[in-house]
Length: 342
Ligand code: SAH
Image (cartoon, rainbow, N blue to C red; front, side):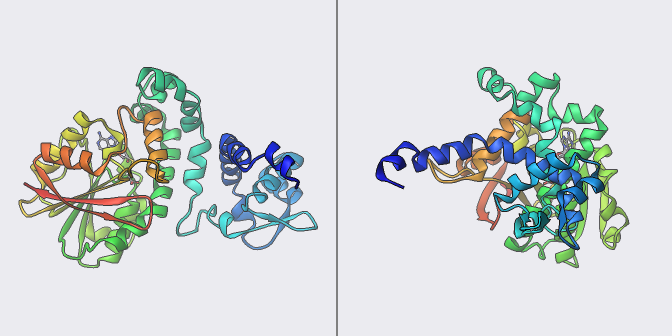
């Protein structure tokens, strides 16, 4: 390329285009995940025609989605028009131990996609975008839309499959006797913690309708070491644990609501107990930071939710009568904020 033409389409312009059109990739991944393309390619490569027959899709259109995805490394197309798996597309298989499938489907679903279209309204009003679209907060909306609640739970389970293992290896849970996972969803994280720590007992606490779906913990091999507790963490949390863990809970709420949850943990925790908040801890200034993307997700989806800096966590914990002991980074997107009753 001549100097002159490289100035006409600069690297910055290419990067700007890639960033601006990110929504195309989001929806293409979501459609492939929804159709289960990665499952269909598990055994052998297949053409778009074959994949369309298996998924009842329109073959030429599916072909266009798949060749776009192959251009960013998700699936690969061979010279005979057959698509095959790549390391990236493997992550869309539902039986992959770090499966991203549930998250991918959630990102493209009406529940998440429509509120993102109202980011502007959220920025102008300070209210979450989901309230502008559905007239309800995220959890209020899920309470009366069981299909969307299923999409969300599968999304959280998938997020736990991606981020949970890094949390489990970053911290020594073996010294605890009884750990309470507050807002533990379907129990993905608790399952991983109990599996890695054979003497530990666990309590899964979440809304009754959510814990009803915790089938792997309820029926699986860990059932005799795990209690299930349906309830509202704004009213109380199960008592008597020596460890309380909350992953992706505090970031859902403003300081006032977060304090209600933390004070309920303070009332319930043993005097010598440990509270573990598992959330992103915002990095300073311009550093690349997935936490800052997540923070916008909270602006769109959560009523007053946001990611916080270490100083903000310390202040919040102090107000709830805990003192921050240390922040342990994990290999994933999250950190473990360890604190004790003051
Ligand atoms: N800790 C899980 C789920 C995070 S999503 C994970 O990391 O995957 C937030 C969770 O908070 C959801 O499971 C939701 O059901 C739960 N939650 C929201 N409001 C609640 C309330 N009032 N009482 C108990 N749990 C609640």
